[in-house]
Amino acid sequence: VLQEMFKGECRFINGTEEVRLVVRNFYNRLQDVMYDSDVGHHVGFTPYGEKVARAWNSDPDFMERRRAEVDTVCRHNYELSTP
Image 1 (cartoon, rainbow, N blue to C red):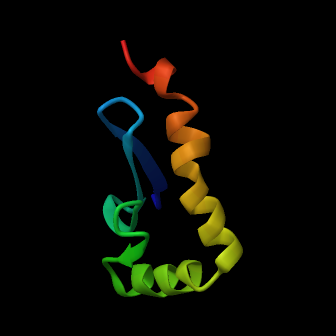
Image 2: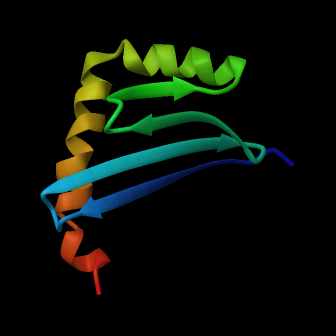
Image 3: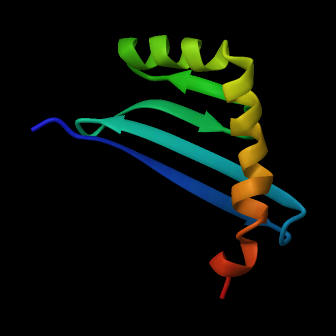
C-alpha cells in the first residue's frame, strides 16, 4: 500500500506576534519535503523530495501562496486553535 500525506502546523509565540508555519510531506511514512516559514523555502530529504522542493521553490506563484499561508491559515485561525 502506498501512502501520501502532509501535516501542517502553526506555532504561535506571543499570540500572533510571531507565527511559524511548518508543512511536512510524507510518502510511505518517510518525510520527503518540508516547508518552514522561518527558512522561507522547501527542503527535500530524499532524492525525489529534493526534486519536488526545487520545482516548488522555483514557482513564484506557488511560493507566494505558501508564504501567505502564515496569515491566511495560521493567524486567521488563531482563536480556533487556542483554548
